[in-house]
Length: 306
Image (cartoon, rainbow, N blue to C red; front, side):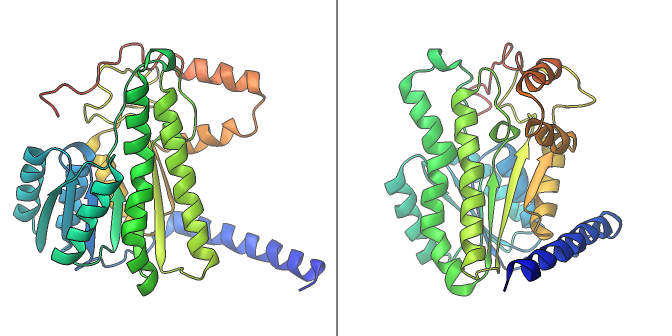
């Protein structure tokens, strides 16, 4: 195809895609049926992981729950069965350990079957400024928040590719789109998670595996306890998010094959501004939104909450 024809094609398709997007603002997208799908959720022992488990359970899925906290897993598994999960299994797994991820993944394949919806949700935060963070905690942050995604993809993506069917869900963060003072290692890990999910999604598209969908979730602070103590400067613009509402929105995004989910909705505008504002104006906006002081009162999740 020559330059002129291809340019015309891009212009017309761009117009159509914008019209299509506008139509879906008025007409909801059709939800897919996930009954019988095998859903694996990492970090399922508490927080958003547990709440997503509950939402998936009500839709007749087979649940595979991973966490390092066995007691939390038992509670989540019990909850899943009580709200209608057709089957629910739990496996203790340290997602920061590549060999353990592969070992437990093999166990899942033998005992449950191939995973068709993979939700990389496990995450940690040090809450320390870069120079104050011990090397070991920085490494652990990258291992859990980023590298674990590599190993779970390696373990479960081959079956999805063979069937051209599946869904990859990355629970990242708005801190994976915009840098935050006091969250250098966390931001780095979440930027990497977003970039990794985007890139693999493009690889799948380029190789014709369009039956495998990707959803990348970038929420602001959620009231799960992970960021306890943090305060938002303008609650109406950037509220601390309710965990149950976030879980419901994530499941809705999966059911409608939504690629990007930013929460709250104001994050779409804020993230877009970052890409074209002058640097000084961007810093000014960051100060106005409180990004320089978000972590000043950070306490984090207590041992009891864990």
